Image 1 (cartoon, rainbow, N blue to C red):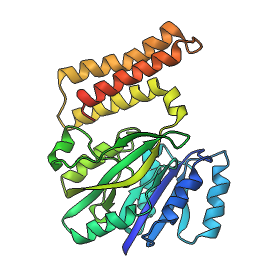
Image 2: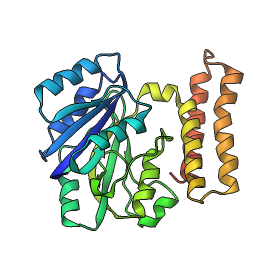
Image 3: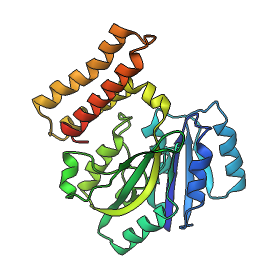
Image 4: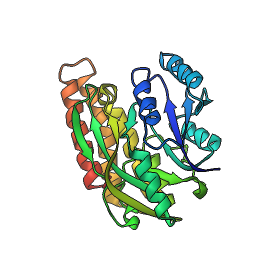
Length: 278
């Protein structure tokens, strides 16, 4: 483990349109003691050529894998290959604010009892348009059992805590990680924008599937930590089935289908925030 080094893991699978901006945001950090570990899932687009060109150009970038069993497995491969004192991961369609790592590391250095630092994140559209401010709420650490108030992008935790992601999770693995971190360390939320998340059109088109899978995982996590109610189970099942019923009734080629998807997505968000509180 190298003192002060931040290991940034970048999972990637066919994100040729965004990987360059992602990597540049790490390279352009005001904090320079950084290694970039790319876990590629077998990309077949331009992203692999872009990655290889960066590896040749920068000595602190390396590819740690060329295949994986999902995003959580990819990130774990990066963690296992890391040499840093501090760890974060950055999805290949997201990017960091210029001072993100400098701010996070300074807080961790100043507060030895803190294991995780997080801030706020701006969600943007494909065209760079502002969509939403995802505020990193300053809450009691214990509240993480009830809802995920921590934006993942820009969050940094100590490597010495020995944490890995649950590889059975693909959509809510960060919440599960925060819960486990809360058992062994303290959190520090700061009033700073640490990163930017791209909300893709592709994800919006697949919103029924995504919502269903994420909802199932949220429920699994609540069950895992004995924090689930009958209302959770009922509304979760209703949310999951609504997407399936929509496709069955309207069909993907129906002109009303995109509108129904949008309504279902809004219903999901209301459910997730009010019932699962995440």
